[in-house]
Image 1 (tube, one colour):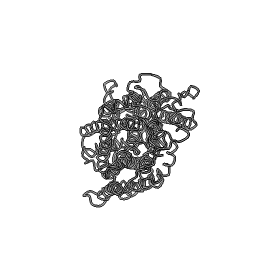
Image 2: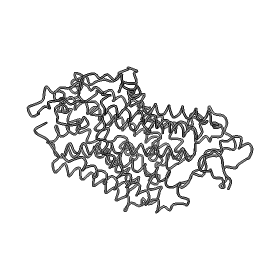
Image 3: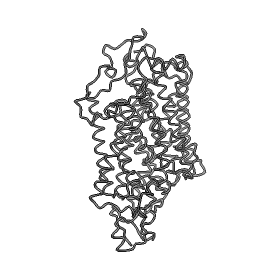
Length: 610
């Protein structure tokens, strides 16, 4: 253990406290002093659809670059090398796909909850399935987001992370509850600026201290860290060019294209063109911050190339490398550690607040509102949504204590996200691309996919905990450690350089976690197609074109004249896409444009005339 442990000083605490205070004040402003109060559903969830491109772009960047990325990516580069860095190549393709394939449909329909689409395209039951899968996804993800800053803060202050966790959550719950989407977006903007500043300052200072970029690259090359084109097609290898580019494409597509947080923010803009521009600004911002985080990992390795802190016992987990690095090389610079920790906390707070706000919208619009037999007043709706934020926020605090027992943050986060990401991407993609898929097929596909990938993901985590699967890190050394270190008698197990034979482990448990979303999507769509085939598939001419991506319109038969545009209001989805029983449509003409037509609950593909 290092003899000279550097912790926060008073100035660092003041800088960090100022960031938390500003975040809270933004929530207070939009709750009590803004011209438009956050007391309606449209204002609380959609920002009145008057948000600007800059804050929305900053909010999206902050939402998708959490503390997991800020701490996990440098640790990944240090421990396993740079192959994961190539994920930035797939992010541009994902943004283009969203802009031209997915977003036009959602924007045209002007829906509050993404899962309203599943009701319009399939049935209320499919919408409910999608909503529940999303809630499960966020409840698995947010505890990791909370744990990350607590871990880092504990490293730089010496305060127990279990004491820090409630503080993080209370601040975040406070401004998210009071200020709604506008408070979330503007705090995200503040936090994005802090996040960039903290990362850039630390890596620039670290590079200069080492003698320049050339020296950083040289040391990493000597340490076998530089690896970008491992072209081995074996799907059981954790990171190759194919897993990080091809596999990650589907992971990011699921995270962005059909994610409630993404759609909710894009629809808060005044036009589709502005929404598309915002997506590409987000892609550029993510590309930059991910690359900065990865390069920071190289700087950390170059700094500790001859004295690995984990083997030396200075830290307990590789995810503590970045805060340890900051306190080691910049601890003597006034306020810099405080600025850095503000950036890490900012990334975590923004991801958590986005998750709480989007979950609030889904729970209220998809679960609570449909359960009421009469309209809910705006005042009551506002109160219910704020209660939802508080409840799910504190539920996530309870789950954070499970995160400590997981492996590396990047893999744990993506593995758990993969359980639900594939099924959600499959459900929406079936709806957009395959008009003959019916609601029964969609339900079967979504359930099968979630259960299968959940089994694979959780089984893999269990195998890692048992020691059946060990990912061999790059070599490290402690030959250059000074006398200030007392080396442990037993080397850290995670730094073992002995190749581990995983051939006896079940094949699906050995598949790279970056393929989970692709597997889930394929299983969902194939199952949905097979079940639909045996349960009377839809007539493509009876599915309204507004529910299908424009890219497939040219390949479809002419739309049936009885098929009317689906309608949805702010408070109720009144009609499903079209009457999909073609024989029924021929037997009896139904004017689906009439206000007297309401779709029957349960999604049995018929209409009632009251």
